[in-house]
Image (cartoon, rainbow, N blue to C red; front, side, top):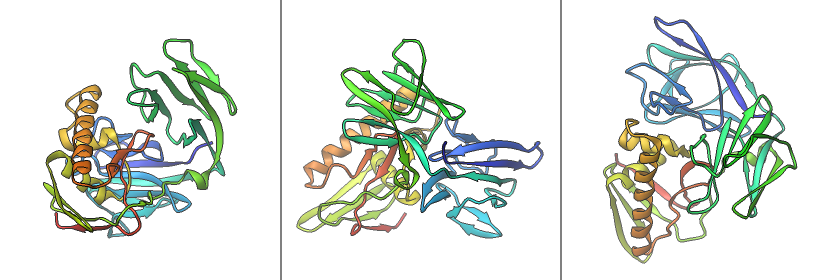
Length: 300
């Protein structure tokens, strides 16, 4: 079973419609959003469903929302809650499901919870799980009810049950159960010197003991600012959409994003900073990896 929230979308002038969203589901105007909303006051990436603190929460991204007339950026999702995204769009929570355990995919010592309805295994630059049904993926997984289906390459689709395994390019993958508490998003702890990030939106200044200030600009700076504002990982599609919109196809957006991340890593290394500050987490999500002593100063 999976963790998910069910809700009704109440939008002025339209018939109410129902939706079911899991961890990592994006809400907004982007074509890749799990819940796409056609309203000019809704941001392209407006809010995100996240699993944390033992439950599902709604996190504001580019714009905040109202609950009980109060502007908020983070709220726990419970049955009966009314979340006003805009004046004309309200999400009415009708149910929340939180199982004791969720399925996970294991490979090379990693265990990644399967919290979405579809995923793809890609091999470049290394085995990675992305939360999308990507054309050309080495393997594709999708949920049918509470069960999982698998297709490796162009082979015939088969059922994938707990304990079942498959191999892709010499790497063995296995489906296992994982306690829900272990599947929650947790901040990454850094073993390096504390960082101080000063955000100016178009530029980010990185400071650390014994090193000159490193100035990051352009798309990399905007990515860091977006992720710092959300306080949660974003799908790579949402992150790329914030930079370039969704007029380009997924392949083009992914290439642009990978190029930005590659240049950022080079600049971080050259400046004597850790190169994992901003990286995909192996689950199709992009996160800002801050340690417990890192400080973010928002001047955007």
